[in-house]
Length: 530
Ligand code: NAD
Ligand code: MLT
Image (cartoon, rainbow, N blue to C red):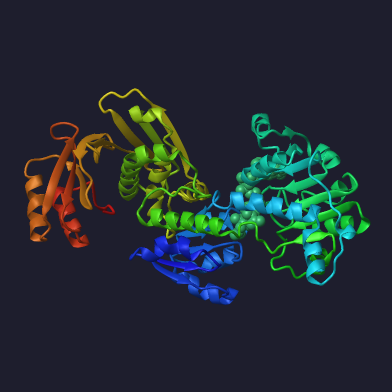
């Protein structure tokens, strides 16, 4: 597997990949856009921080790419829908730098309150001045936190340690979460009107871009302090500059910018403003955090390589890891059923239903459905269909996907049945696990009992004496060895279905001979990925 690293990532954290002989790791920093477009087609995975725009254009060149690994939390530099459409897994490292980001927030806030950067410059410049650097205490002030997530929560705890009263605006959390952090939930307007310090900690998205704008500044207390260590653009930067210049805001501390590196006039003026404390996106730049996030994404790449569930995929529905471990054999069974039926059923299915009966049905079966659906769809399209894009591909093709569960089961302790509705009628396949191995126990309305193998042959015909012998002879002449045979029939002399496991593929000519020899209604060679 080839992995390209396009932003600075901790070497210590990449050791896991470096040590693995299956991985070729190429660190290519400072690539121009066009260069990366040219290179990306060779790679199976890309590791980035916020410096690389993984946009739809880059992804269109990424023919082999299976994973975008973002060594950090923010995924605003990754076009996740475009990746999902291509079946590319996007993972991030949502926990590794939380503490660093929270500590950096406090660092810039304290630096702002106590004029540390300007006092530092003054003393180093040979002056001994004290009065101009008189600052403010945090104690007994009101901290307003916007977004009480992982970083916001830690900032709340640290603010309380400074004896601040903490109010929170976050429409997506419970009152309990707010009170667990010793904070109070308020509306955005209330927060803006009462806080002495406002610190934003939301993700950047369509809803939060420009969340704090001119009208909010107008409603703030005079002399308020503003902190942004989340993402540039959550606070409108032009409005921020105006509020500093008008004196409404006493000072601000920003680590992040709508443009990185900042180049626009507004950003240059903002950065140069004497009452701004600024850092170049350093929130996560601690040795600890950088090792953590690099280890986290390296693990995810190895999980993918080892066919294990990835833990922090942002574009695969997240399931409990214990549930996934239990479900894995059933996911494999569903994939076999989906792959098998997709090769036998008529074209243009309009609906597929996954029915689960038995003990299995007591659990959330959605991962099994998605695994089965991906296998079912994989042969209908040139694009790779997997757990990431299976639902999307089904939706695009107008395929309705249904799921039903019942813990009551007649014959099997667990049974998965797929029903495919096509313009030519309904097709059914059902399977179970026997000592952990998939068994197919129903095809159409025939009871069957066989273990799916790599190469198989399915024939239906009017049952008459001597036909099995003829099949054996023709396959023997074609030097195809039969490993196992399963015969299902509706009754003496009725329609019969023969399923053969064979050791090698059958060519078209042999298929035609077989068809003629038994007067087959249906004959099909099936190939299942080993
Ligand atoms: P998180 O997902 O854990 O928390 C985000 C919180 O914002 C959630 O509680 C969510 O409910 C809330 N939220 C979402 N939309 C909101 C809205 N419209 N109004 C109010 N609240 C809203 O994320 P996190 O890990 O805490 O990260 C927070 C931010 O910090 C992100 O933007 C992330 O990219 C950034 N970050 C920056 C650095 C850095 O280097 N400066 C490091 C780490 C994280
Ligand atoms: C993040 O989103 O994790 C941070 O902004 C840090 C980074 O980009 O490295």
